[in-house]
Amino acid sequence: MEDGKMTQTTLMRLPQVEKAVGLKKSAIYLRIKEGTFPRPVSLGAKHIAFRSDEVEDWIQSRPRATNGGER
Picture 1 (cartoon, rainbow, N blue to C red):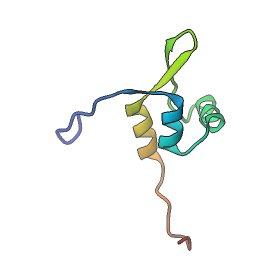
Picture 2 (tube, rainbow, N blue to C red):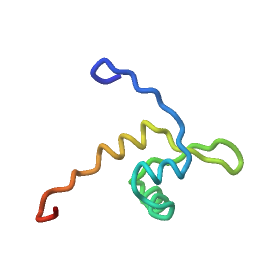
Picture 3 (cartoon, one colour):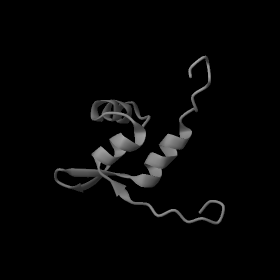
């Protein structure tokens, strides 16, 4: 709980994660392999999902873009 707010953790399927982080499947899996992206949880033999709180933490840990001449 942060600032008195309780965040509900949900499970996100890969297409939702791709949309949320702006990366494609191959880039996400490369980062998982490198240990720089949250690992998915198993939902069964062939199904995985990502914890929304871990994905949100990863997004928040990304540096913000600077205005280095870009408009």
